Structures are given as C-alpha cells and as structure tokens.
Image (tube, rainbow, N blue to C red; front, side):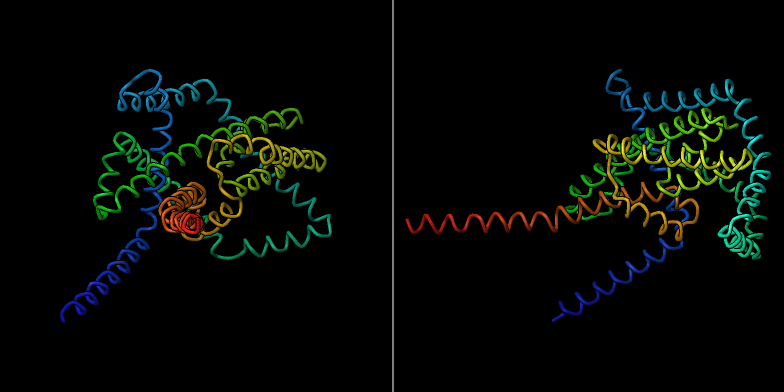
Length: 355
C-alpha cells in the first residue's frame, strides 16, 4: 500500500532536482562556457602531446610539459622575429581603417542601394545601447584577458590527468550507465581532437592564401590581414564573412577597383576551402552539417554572447557525438537491428518447420 506514494514521491523529488539543476546551469552559463573552452584547449594539448608519447615513448606528463614549453617558446620566438613587423602592420591597419571607411561610405553614397544601407547603419548605431557597449570596451577587454588566463590554467590541469576527472564524472552516474557514458566521452574526445586538427589546417590554409593573394594584388598590410582571416576562420561561415567584409572595406582606400579585386579574392579563397580543402580534411575529421553549424552559432551567440560564437561549432560537435552514442546507437539503432534480425530469422524457422 505504501509503494505507490513512495514511487510518486520519488518522481516528484526527481522532477524538482532536474528543475533545480536546470536553473543552476542557467545561472552558471558563463562558467559552463569557460569550462568547455578549457576542455577544448585541454583536448588540443593532448592532441599535440600524443605524437610525443607514441613516437618518443615519453610519459604523458613529460610530453604535455614539452608541448606547453614548446608553445611558449614558439610564441616568444615569433614575437622576437616578427613582433615589430606585425605590430607595425597592425598599427598601420588601425590607422588605415578610418580613411577606408570614409572611402567606402563615399562610394556607397554614390550608389542607389548604398544610400539605403547607410541610412540603416546610421539608425542602428545611433541608439544609446551602441555607445554604452562601446564605452565598456576596456572593461570587457580586461575581463577577457583574465578569463583567457583562467581557461589556460584549467586546461593544463585537465590535460595533465583527464582520466581523473572523467572517473569523477562517471561516479555520479548509476553503475549500469557508466560503460556507455565512458565510451561516449572517449568518442567525443577523439571527435574534438580530429575537429581541432582539421580546423587548424583550414585556418592555416586560409591565412596563407589570403596573405599571398593580397600581396599579389599589391594590397598593403597583407600579412596582418592574412593573420586576421586565418584567426576568424575558426568560426565557420560568420568568420569568413567578417574577415572578408573587413578586407573589402580596407581595399576601398586603394579605390573601388581594388575593393572588387579583394572581394573576388576572398570569394575564391572561400570556394577553395569549401570545394577542395574541406572535403580532403573531412575524410578523417568530424563532419558537421552546415545547417547545424549555422544554427549553433546563432543559438549560442544569443545564449553566451561573443564567446558563444567561438565555442559554438566544437560544442555542437560534442553534442552531436554524445547524442549519436548515447541515444541513436542505443535507443534507435540497436532495437531496430534486433527487430530486423528477428524478422529475418522468423521466415527461416517457418521454412524449416514446413520442410
């Protein structure tokens, strides 16, 4: 007689706990994003350390330490060799942007459709919210620097002993669920590792091609613009659009013809990435459907702001792998395969019985 009330009470407690966890997660969205960024960086560090472990037979902590020290050495060497040149180019870029904007504005003002675009832009930037955000740029920059440092520290600790934290997470689950979740987490880690390798190759190719193309067009600041294009390529679609618009606007300082050439160049680089580079990379890297990538960028931008755009694609890759392993494979595919096997075995038993 007491079984029914106890079962009902257990369901109520479970529902309240789920709601409480959802509210807690909503309140800690920023922390969750930073934690995922740390996980992503930890996966990158483990991916770079893996060849040292496999080929040089180094222990995991030593391989990770060499990767971290090697990364710091590469950054220091790049600053020493190219720092002055890159800093000069970015200073020139900052100085060239206002005249280029004026040239682009004058060209748009001479076109019928350009006047409409300028009016829309003027209305969009006249609100108080725009200037309030602009005024808080220094505070946002300081917060971003502290967040990056926190992410780096957490990533190093996670990469040093990922099994420890994975076991701690598995201990929160029932015993019968742990093997499946453990396999899904390991598959997600491998998927993120392959995605990072593919994305790194894509960023390097886009940055190099952009710099070479702009240099051939006689554009100044080709190196710095190539670096920007390569970095922005980390965000699929939106990164390419943003860097392309920036390069085209800066090209207006050299005239409308140069801006058209720059637009054709950026379109050619984008087509090369889509038609040649990505199919080659996706042979061994994780392939995320383009629609899911766009939806993820918009959705996580609304939830987490600019940081959400940066982690949207890898987070969607993670969710896609977990859903595939924990739901599709176990709940959909396995019962379907068992049903098809049973349906295929039944006629054979009937035939044997008749014979």
